[in-house]
Image (cartoon, rainbow, N blue to C red):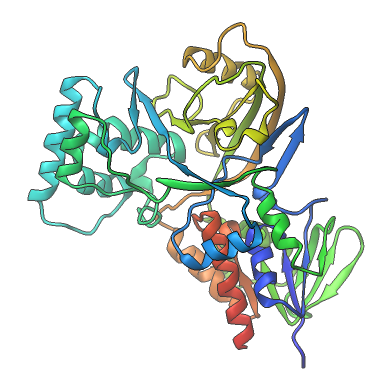
Length: 429
């Protein structure tokens, strides 16, 4: 029997899967347009991405692929990211850039990193243990713990450090000392360099994938999946059969979409999945050059947002001449709900207190993105739950892909590679 591969979701992972399969597959996307979280919106001359999305390359393969898809369109940037804490701006990452902070804090950070070198490495039971082992109590107290608490909305003691390897730069004594007495010139972290399209916003990447794919059907929201009959029904009345299914839909939603009875351990695994939502406010400002930075982290609770970014510094094309744009990100979850009444006013007031906006600044346009599935919570149930669910679906030739399909912290490059990996699996069947 010939293969009939159906892909649910036209975000980067789904598009990459179809691109690498080439033939014999079809993508079904619930929205009217493709791109998922990598889409962009054009309003009054401004281009706003769904959230802050930048391209980082760890592999030559993806770098070549994206450059072939967007020939001459990617502009390289050297990261200009900062942290605002203790009423001081310091360079990112904090662990290598304490210069400018109060002397007593710098001293604690330096002494703390020496402590890590004198202790025997042990198995980390939670994210807090991992922070202290890698950075010492000073850096943990003055940045790592408060920022992660604010970002993840749950205490780091409830989390595991599985996601940190590729995203949190580790430092040695030399980097900590150098960064305490002057701005550290050594670039650290996966995002020390990034690329962004010259024109059109980040959605140019999914659009370039789509131009290479024949069968993409939008406005097809999944209503039900029958894994025994291998059939998918959509809310618009259409249905389709499959031999192999690739789901990039949020993993947690498959629990209600699959109509077949699931084993008790799979049901229990689904009930333990947790996530952080992101409330993202985009603003178009009637003033040029409101900030020269790419983005700023805010670890302290006296500001409602955990990060503010400035798209006009990624590309001049995303704002009209003489204007500026920004996005402010807030995280929330069942553990820490967000009171959304008057939230835009609160964000604006905090932007004024942070000296990003002036009280008299005219806001030309605003665009809200309330992203239900923002980040996966890596708690102590994470590994067992995801493995149990993944194994169950794999037995039925249902493959999970992408950031939310696989329920995994991923960059855009990771999502592209994940699509390639799934296509390789299917091609071998």
